[in-house]
Length: 150
Image 1 (cartoon, rainbow, N blue to C red):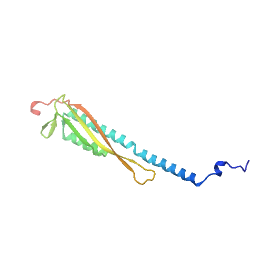
Image 2: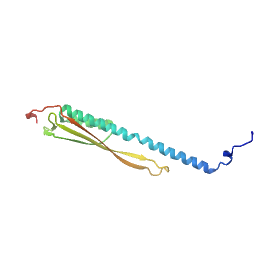
Image 3: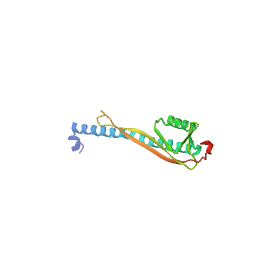
Image 4: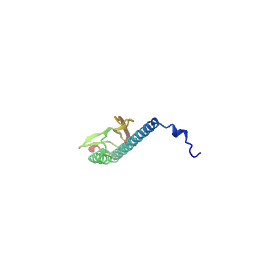
């Protein structure tokens, strides 16, 4: 009984090692690909926060001002993103500001792309997929502008 060997160990060949090596390689590729998966979710949260802050700023001030542009620049620098920002509504230009009247609706849309990298088992060429992200919020102005202020 002490000299009996298991049949599994007696029939082991180089093919088994190659199969195990391939499995390890596939698992490593999956792990490296999963490292990049949280990136779109984090970027979407950043875009949502940026959009919410812009909408709140316009609602409170009743205009797209220098302060609004400064807020946008600061948040872009903090999040290290360069999204496209579209502000639409019934705005009226007045002294370099785009003002909107009390109870007028407006929308802010923030768009960006995130690159997803998927690793192949051979580690040769990664597959890159561009995923578009978009966040759009509506707001209502809380500021009443008199006739001579618009």
